[in-house]
Length: 195
Image 1 (cartoon, rainbow, N blue to C red):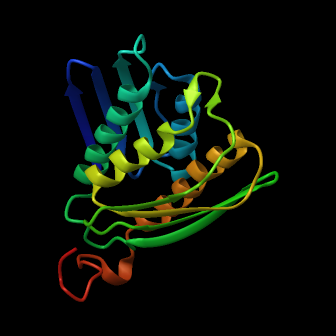
Image 2 (tube, one colour; image 1 turned 90 degrees about the vertical axis):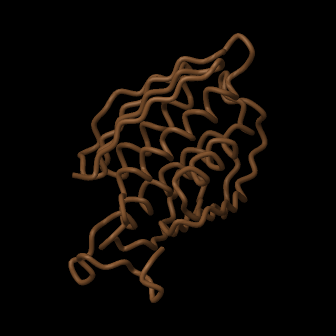
């Protein structure tokens, strides 16, 4: 079973994550940041994972620590759940349209972290969420999972639509990349024999 449960406590946050890569989109998410919760729900639902996240953070300062640390722990949980990454398709791409917004996401579930985040938005905030925290979340996720993600905004004007399209595009690509391919059942998809 490709599942993991990770807890991380610091002086700034307490984060608990449970994940099942072969789920059905179920779970409970509460980070104390409503828009961020909404984005994580998109990831959970559209990648067909079960994901529960409970984050308690120092919101009296701002939401930075809560968002970044949640990315760290989700990344660690994905890494543990993937195990040796045998049999997975590894590579995948997806594009999501949301009204005027169109965003692409390409991923490699290899073990080398790298992030390209070309998703500019006009608004500094959506509700209480600082939009610059998106890149902090993705960087934390990438570095702790060990994966490559390239995001590119193709079009869009509404900041909510653009960011939501990026989370949905990631979800669709992640769903494909984590899928076990019967043709390579117990093998690593690499000519090196490791990833």
